[in-house]
Image (cartoon, rainbow, N blue to C red; front, side, top):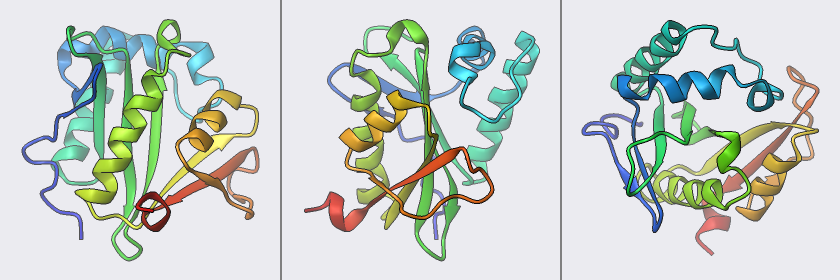
Amino acid sequence: MITNFFKPFPTLTTPRLTLRQLSIEDVENVFALRSNKQINKYLDRQESKTLEDALNFINKINDSINKDESIYWAISFKNSKALIGTICLFGFSNEKDTSEIGYELLTNFQNQGIMKEAIEKVIDFAFKVLKLNEIEAFTHHENYSSTKLLLKSGFIKSKEAYKEYPTCAVYYLTSSVYNK
């Protein structure tokens, strides 16, 4: 069972990036992510309309982390505190030792290998620290960039359709495949 893995918050680093906890100082960039029509095109969520919406989201995420329900990192460059994207593990199933992964990146930072670097670090954390057996990802059939990222990161497309969201494909990565 996943408990107390997020206290203290696990800050992760890569050669270029720091993955850290969201803070209220991130409100403007969280708003930029959650109000951007291009970023939200394939996501089933309510867009932020105000900075208060973004602040409420940050508070909701940090509350979820405190309850060990999810882990949500702000992505920034090592030499900067400015949030450029986010990546998270959520929807934990203790019975199956699985979780879902989600991510988003401000448009001016896309196609630079940033999310590939971040997702590799989070996958490593999920399998080595949390001891998960599987990570799932749901992505819209037309979100080619996300599909490409998942495949490059070792995920395999499920043959089963996701009935609740017929426009999405399901991808998964197992610890046995990752550890080979």
